[in-house]
Amino acid sequence: MFSNIGPVQLLIVLVIVLAIFGTKRLRTLGSDLGSAVKGFRSAVNDADEKTEQLSESSEDADFDSTPAEDARKEKDA
Image 1 (cartoon, rainbow, N blue to C red):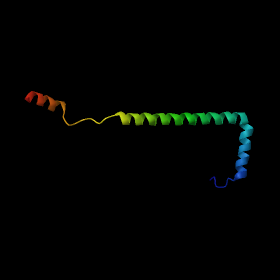
Image 2 (image 1 turned 90 degrees about the horizontal axis):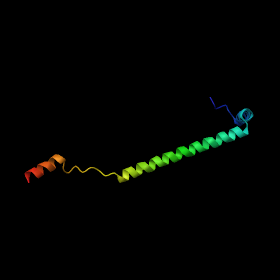
Image 3 (image 1 turned 135 degrees about the vertical axis):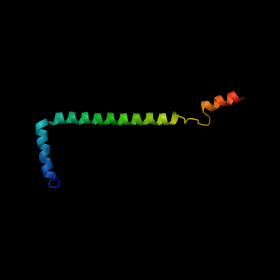
């Protein structure tokens, strides 16, 4: 479908887009998009750091004895 599009056609599309929107509007659109991507990346990095902190601080449960076994041992003693 897009295999017939060459550099000349892309240049024509770029000129049409510039004529419709103007350079100032495209510049603000680009900066808004860049800041949105930057915010998304920082949110993902913060979530990864919190996940790592939670996995490092959590300890596995100790299943060597249950509360019922502890009560039985106290009762027998």
